[in-house]
Image (cartoon, rainbow, N blue to C red):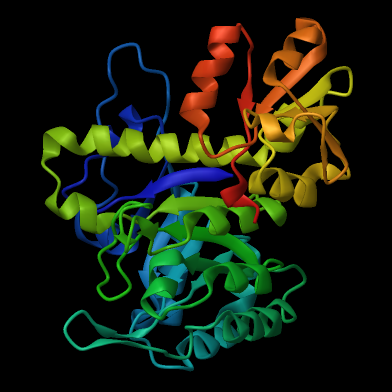
Length: 363
């Protein structure tokens, strides 16, 4: 997964770089106004902040403007162009691409068509031609047939899908063959807030946007495209001195999501060790349904004495002390219960190293 942040003033490029990101997505209107923004690297800093690509509103696009953006993208070594479709009438993309598909192919820079909707925060949001991935797939499929190689893909904006109460997990699955980018931002389902993921909750802490299943779906499809944080609403209000701190949170989100990408191979794929799961409840069921066939546990343990000596889904359930009967170099202990902190403390007191299985990504 290639991760970056969409740049908008007053967000500083220094904050993006200091947080560990290597890419910044630049709205082309910034280039038109003041040129490509620059930043000062810290002394001894070797990391280079690169342009991931450019963003441009589809309703303003003309063949001449597309040529100009493609030239700039090539000059700044960008990787793509995203066309925004908010409040966009149908037919514009088709008209421009039919005239320019040869030019697009010559430049070799792909174009990602973003899902959108119609409306604003005051009047609310409704569907437009580009709201559903079935329409985006149809457009991408048609124009990719015009080229010798696929040049049109899909950028899915999580926040826009949420505004229309879409089943985002299903939308991602449907467009998996064309999905090249995800714009990650959060809202409460009513206003286009463009805040960080996990920001909005309802009821007793339930997430408004189902980030766990969204990331889980990307893991299942082995998504290797761009993950760009489009959190301009946050940085429009965030004090400048806090920008780097908020950026580091987003960088931590990337690391967390990437760790789930590698969970099975990194944690479970140890054939020379005996897999021991701590927990014999619903999460064990979830584990067995997702990973049980490929990575069967040696046994499971649980703090509930009534379960000791029984089997659950074919897995023997034992006293947690039985973990110590397996030599340290031979065991692979994974917490498989929602009480991670308490069980983690228990295992540390026993001198047992462990990993964690978070079923919310998989069920």
